[in-house]
Image (cartoon, rainbow, N blue to C red):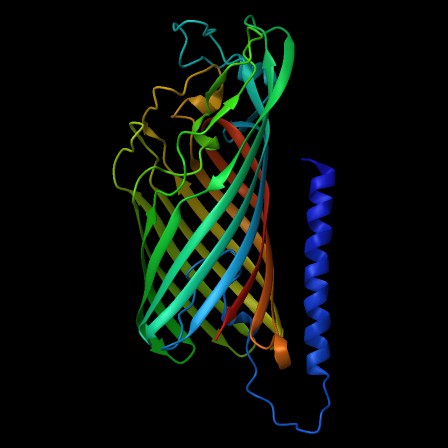
Length: 369
């Protein structure tokens, strides 16, 4: 983990939350002549910011949103066990036998960061249907150390970087139940392959050469396929307490143009929130996730590194999250929402040697009218 980077993001997010606390508190303390006030807007009427497609809108309503997510990974784990560099170097190289390929892994990823910028829009043509679209711009960086062919000496390191558009999600939320605070709706969507799957970068090989190659699967920006996104969401509340649950899946439609298919994925999340006042709520969330291995193989991705092996992808994860939702109540900030959520892994059981998750942080703004 890079302390200066984390500290910088922490200061920015703390300043953002402090600003909205100030403005919201100021608006609530307003003492004008006209004391007639519109109905309060509950901060917890939206799920934690890390949950997508959690709420529907009334006929004619529009909502715009922006989310920023930072995710950090470091170290190597296989299954439930953390691996030392020596254990990674003893792992067989899938591509051994091809020219310039040593018998074991010789390039070890040490840290990966992902920065995601998500812009979304929602529109409700009627009370029972809300349409949603979300585009994403992503930046990835991965640091590596490199060992010589015998694996007994480190010869250097390198960093690969990519950025660009990721896949675009288009969804419809269909109401199933509307009984006061109890709400249930279907999530029906598709993910469109707008993210690149042919990203390249310069690397350092165990032989000391610096070729430009197609980067491994975790460094690509999209799936390359049209993916189906089915799901269901439930929300409810009683007094100052609200809760909800959501089940979502990502179903791949087939192999992409580079002859591989990312694994199907499933996610189940549940949360509870407490409203301290209409303008502020805090939440606890638990998320379980499963991600399958890659089927097929990109012929241009090869090398003595774990990320080039399509079987070293995915696993089973449980994460816990703590969030804060804020919403303006009066004046020019009425209806504007700011939210933040931090997540840490509770359990991660990985499919072969991979970098393990350290933490993720998401902050966002939403406004409906």
